[in-house]
Length: 280
Image (tube, rainbow, N blue to C red; front, side, top):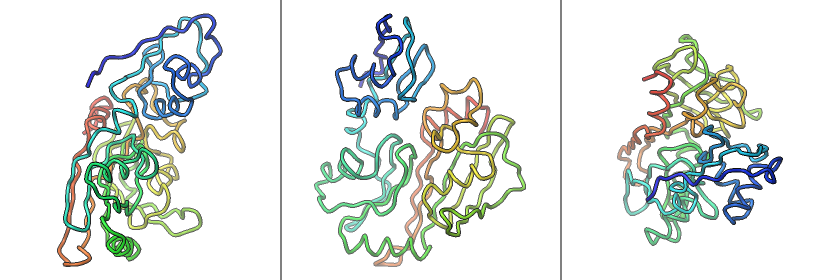
């Protein structure tokens, strides 16, 4: 797969156009597809990674797109299988893929593995990488969903958060959408710019880690929704997406009771971001 950048120079007639509109016109794709490219963090303007659809262009701006990681190319990538048996599988999800719906990792695996009943059991955000559990039949999905509901699933994440998270903060209990929520955290490394955290969520509220880290004023780096104003200056190019990774998923098998433990190693973009911020 080629990793060359597709380069386009904005003309005086392009001045004032939004980046989304410009990409749609130049690449002859829909505005929705252009937004997908921006969401994948593979578009650069004058060497700076830009993902805002409404970013206005100026004449002579140099726009670059990493064609090797367009949505079509990503959709063809078969994720690594971490665990599989006749009823379920756990895969290492690539950042940039939806977990279900059209063009999702669920669709890809159904086609590649010839498993039309395959269904995700829990959700990971599009920009979150790591362990994702899927059931091969409705009966097993119901059993696995029950495990989540009974809090018998261990979920460990790694995150790179903005700023130095105080070492004394070991848990966050801020309610999410009016419901109790608990995140336990361990600071692995930190400096004034950012912190490398390991987090265990004992509840599974929507965007729990992202919202809990925002609550302590140290949001996940690259989080456009909750943390855009907290990003460290001069490092935008090294933060390709929200830096959140599902590293461990462990649970008792609903049928046998045997312990299932899956580990997804930190992906290359996460490790690169750690290095650029002088973290380990």
